[in-house]
Length: 112
Image 1 (tube, one colour):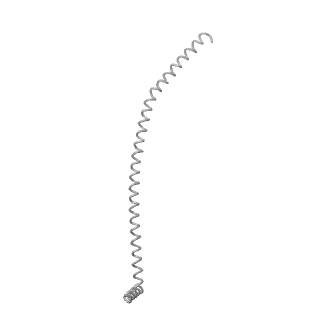
Image 2 (cartoon, one colour; image 1 turned 90 degrees about the vertical axis):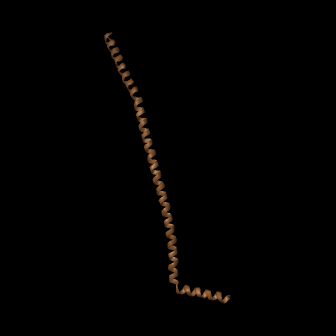
Image 3 (cartoon, one colour; image 1 turned 180 degrees about the vertical axis):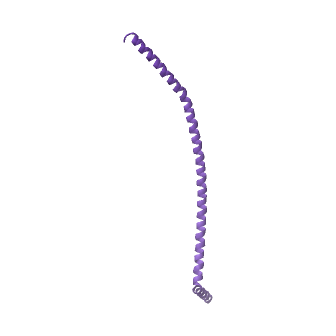
């Protein structure tokens, strides 16, 4: 058994020494394949993140559009509420002007 073990060890060492370059290339190829697999997995992960990012961008754009429509609707409502008030203010100021004119004229008549 010991002789057999030593024989196999010698055979392995002989094989290693005679095929060293081939073994190194084989091991390098295994490393390259493992690295390639990691790169592909990373690329897939990045593609998923890009897709999620695009999905979020579209969702955000939709929400912004909705907010802009809401703002425009509010601005229209504010304008509708302002118009009667502005008209009332214009009427009030013309009434005030009429009263002032009347008082000035009366004061002139009375000799003030």
